[in-house]
Length: 301
Image 1 (tube, helix red, strand yellow):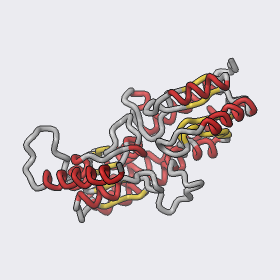
Image 2: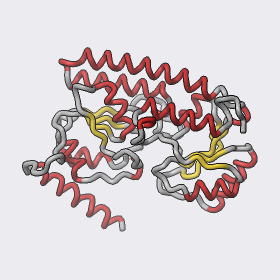
Image 3: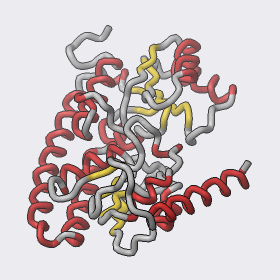
Image 4: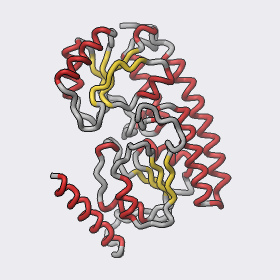
């Protein structure tokens, strides 16, 4: 199985390299030369806030897909071949990326690793779920864009400052919303281990995680332990994202006698307007969490 997978990966990269040597023949298939590429749509949203309209922004991982389970396609190699900037999260999130960069053979590609120099805790790469870290991401993107495109450096700096103020406002707003949840109800069980930094910043206790490693389902013992934790901590809901199968979450919720919330967003923004960019996504997630945990309008039902 591993040999077949490795062979297929080498085959796809070879096909991609061959395509780079041929003229583009189909409309809509050629990458925009000199643009910015982000590994996933959440980072693409942060990048676009800084570099638009000077640089077009593309996400390698499609909206609604998991960055941790993504398999690069030949066109992704071609996209990086024509790009000026690549924005990656780092901290072990994009395990597939290095081969894609090597295959692109673009010596001019400037790579921004957003988590570089930041405190990655418990080997958890999802720092962008804390708006304070997202603000640092934006500052790094602006600095790299200025080096790649000095003529528009002032615009990038100003855009970074404007968006940084929006992120400060978002941070204050989230804190106010979470404060409406009764303290004894600020507990969550989540499917995907993306909520560590959000929970830490806003005083929510993460009681448990269903899938600690991508694609690795919990054992029967681990699932039973989560049920016990949910009951012991009076957890009101188990939270998941639409890109993952709801089967395990629903099984846990039935066993624990709690509700499921299956529409949080983190690795990916959504296609609907209310979750189509980073700020909107974070606001939507917060409203969803607050409602599920009995905060917001004063109703604890």
